Length: 186
Image 1 (spheres, helix red, strand yellow):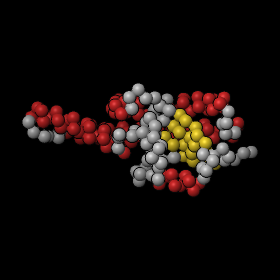
Image 2 (image 1 turned 180 degrees about the horizontal axis):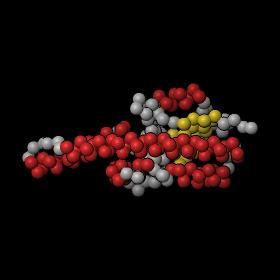
Image 3 (image 1 turned 135 degrees about the vertical axis):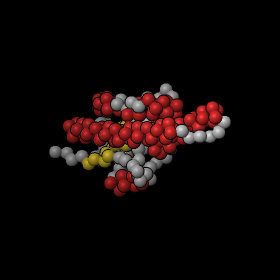
């Protein structure tokens, strides 16, 4: 499984380059191109993470609008309607837009497609959101770029997305990046 901040991707690129240099010269030599590839991979991954967070915010806005107009989705018809709108956002998977990242994702998640899911957790609260930011459940994983919504069926929901490693997107401090929203009914 991939590590945070594309570390595995960088090591794979580095190993391949070093092995190629060893095969040609008989000794390990880290060429300037390796550094450039590693930097490019890091920049691409960081940009994809930011784009994914933007997707999360768009999904949050879309779901909030739906909930304000129709309430939380309970019937299969409502779920299908909002999931279609969310798939339009998730299909803009930022990890698929960069060739290097797409290749890495495909190697760890072959034949996988971006997912959207909406789940109900009656216990969702501000306290739980604060806890989730610090301690992400091990069971939370999905295909990179997937969008997940958890709501309490009353007044609150959160959106999380799977980063390049399939685990919830994290910030530089390793806290889960999520969007939580309170819905007020008018």
